Amino acid sequence: MNVDIYGFGRSMIVDPGMSEYGATTKASFLRSARAHNVMLMDGTGAGYGVDARTWFSNPFIDVFSGETGLGGATWDRTVVFVRPNYFIILDQVRGTSVSGSTFDQLWHYVPGTATLGVGGDRIDVNYTNTYGTTGQLLLKWPSNSGVTLSQRAGYLGRELSGANLPLVDASSTAPADYAVATKVVGGDNRVTFPTV
Image (cartoon, rainbow, N blue to C red; front, side, top):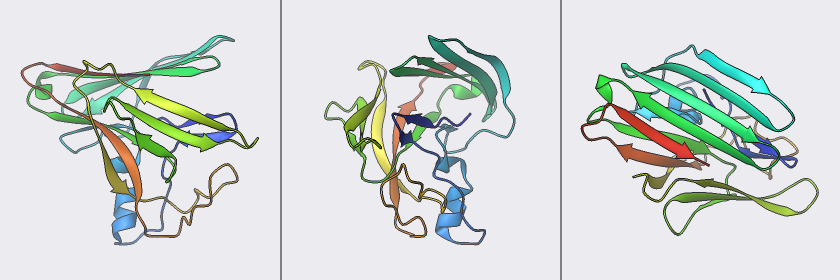
């Protein structure tokens, strides 16, 4: 249920890609759930397989909704693209194992293009598109959502060196930070991440 966001001639939210097989820290990271724009429950990602419940498109809106298992609970992700300018991503995890757990919503971007917002409830991804103009992708959570934002170190895979990305040495073992929205759940059996 990974989400990549591409717009205005530019990759904005990316999947870090693949790596050669081996026992390196970079290869281990790129094979893990942490290397995708997904949800983690207590540090563990979902298994394979998604039940796609909704998928449709028209001139005004695109919608995808699916679910999969996550740590003994059910993770629902709905992605709505309201043409031409914004996405709404709603992640919900429900089940008895939710109570007392920590949830991370991961967002990977091209190094050097993102800054965490001053208010702590937003991620700004700044970029220059293929036409030479600058733009911004803003990921925002409601201020009362209980989300805490942080950055963690990851890596980029070898194929992330396309023409629409800044110059990135994808063979490097240098870290490529990614953003994490975290919530700790008390006694509830449901957690929600509304992201615009």
